[in-house]
Image (cartoon, rainbow, N blue to C red; front, top):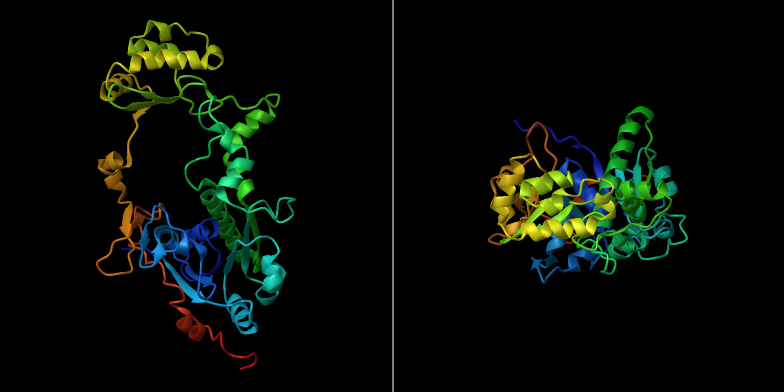
Length: 389
């Protein structure tokens, strides 16, 4: 028996574009909330036109289909008196509003938190910015690569002789979306006691700093020493050998934390086994890693996995997506769904990672075409009625 979704009955207004805000709204939609995207007439969410590797489906970029499934779309020109009035009537009936404009833009529209709170004191209003509303960087573009670069994150990746290296995905946006969803859900819970909503504020910069909490904590309590990336096989700037990914005769193997002498004994390397001083596992990290590599490259990944796993040494194969998706572990997750909105066309993407009692809630509704729900939403929420009617 499929359970009731936990957020059924919650109405969310998504005033966002691209990834951070829409990903927060997506998670709420996955959990049962009704999410209405408020989009600019004619153009809509900019991610409709953001195309990754030329992939488009039914006129929209694949990323838009992924991040906006389970939502509805209304075109509203909030710069016009009529459109603004409609937006305000919708806000008066909503539970959550999420916006990701630069600080001050919503206020310029007449839809600031204070104005929205006056319309609807129970509203949970979430603001997502690049650097925080009061930051001296508030006017900078809040873009993922720029925030990764400004946050220090890029100095943790790659080998020591390489330039700063960002993560090859929109990590800042995605992590900020998670924080926004957490804040919104917390505020909704508090509303049950107080009867009032509140203003949730998150920023890409704060979220990426939070992502780095363990290494920033080390930096703050270790004499402000800059992170030291390994010269060879860097995987974590603050962890000792053997931590990293190593080449084998037919692929790669990942080694996590563990005793270096024990590793040397398992792989049959007297050179590695001789590093008995645990302090040296960090101070001589690169030469230890090179010594490990000199041995591992002579046998297959399967050979080393069998030897290491027999001693409960933490290790794993390094899969491609193709190999992962062919595995029983991936198949057991049942993690892929088709969200195409055109018969005969396929748009495959991931599903919500959250289940309840082992159940998910079935396939997602396809992402909406621009404004496809406009008329129905106007009629349902009486958005075109004048005050007092």
